[in-house]
Image 1 (cartoon, rainbow, N blue to C red):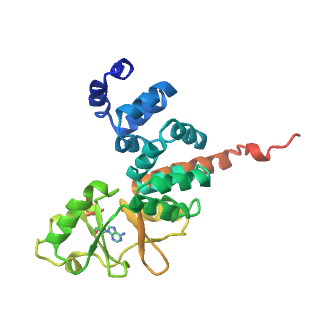
Image 2: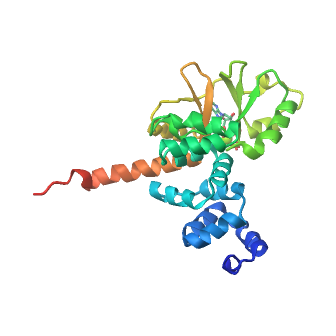
Length: 266
Ligand code: ATP
Ligand code: MG
């Protein structure tokens, strides 16, 4: 499989490789030697590498190794193409100087999105949210909301819910994709949206977010600040990771598995 990569056949490799699910592409990538990985950076675009990095689950020192193999501009472009929450996770593993470096050479808009996510404390809603959501206004028609959806769909982490905000970007409503599609084109969003929106606060614990997601059965939850300004969304796939982390944690405690850090000589 993917012999074309080792043989240096770019087009054949790209054709086979890009057909794989991003998770399988990521798995393949981490199994390669540094030399082969370097070849992959030549054969793939920053956007294509971004898809791989969006699906990597590796240790912090591994991020450092991989990024150091790439050209800094390539790294910056790749980070800009990643979902902002994942890019922030990667940058959180690097030292401040490197982070500043990448953010400077990145395009401004992406840098701003990512920067906004770097400050949130670990294990809070803010640390796992992403800023790529679809926002619409209450006083527009379903037809024009549909146009926004079409325009933004490629970049949004989920298109399953559209969040309705006012001029101050406060969260005032929510609409599912199914509800949008089944509404009359001329209807106003304020007449078809749900205005009792369940949301989480940005500094709320991620376990609480997981609980709400499970209880309400939503595929995503909006994240707001104390003044109800919409800051981001958390999708169910990010919550699956939280739940499995917590389960491992709780299981270790239950089984009495000692934490190596606090082990003492008898
Ligand atoms: P499907 O058939 O795919 O389930 P749906 O429209 O029922 O389509 P759901 O995900 O089941 O979509 O959402 C159920 C309802 O909850 C929808 O009316 C949706 O607008 C609403 N909803 C989604 N997110 C929120 C939220 N954060 N707070 C309140 N209501 C929400
Ligand atoms: Mg439903």
